[in-house]
Amino acid sequence: MSESVYKVIELVGTSATSWEDAAKAAVDTAGKSLKNLRIAEIKKLDMRVEEGKVSAFRARVALSFKYES
Image 1 (cartoon, rainbow, N blue to C red):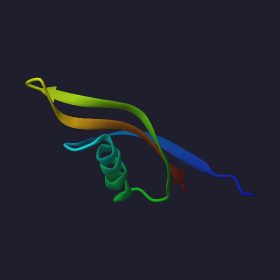
Image 2 (cartoon, rainbow, N blue to C red):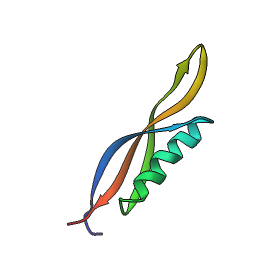
Image 3 (cartoon, rainbow, N blue to C red):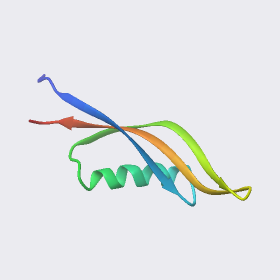
Image 4 (cartoon, rainbow, N blue to C red):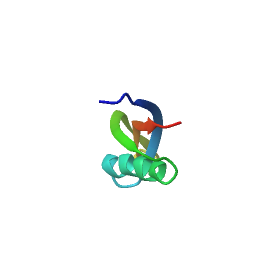
C-alpha cells in the first residue's frame, strides 16, 4: 500500500433551512475548487438568531482531501 498525505481544512456553511443543507453547501462549494475530497466531519452546529427567530443554520465542517504534489 502506498503512503498518502491528506490536508484538513475547516469551513462554515450556512443555510436558511437546515444544518444538513449548511454542511452540504460547505462541501459543495469546496468541491468546485478542490480535488480528491475524502471525509467531512461536523465539528459544530449553531444558529444565527435575529429578532428572536432563527435566521440561518450554520455548520462548521472539517474537510479532508488528498494532497498531491
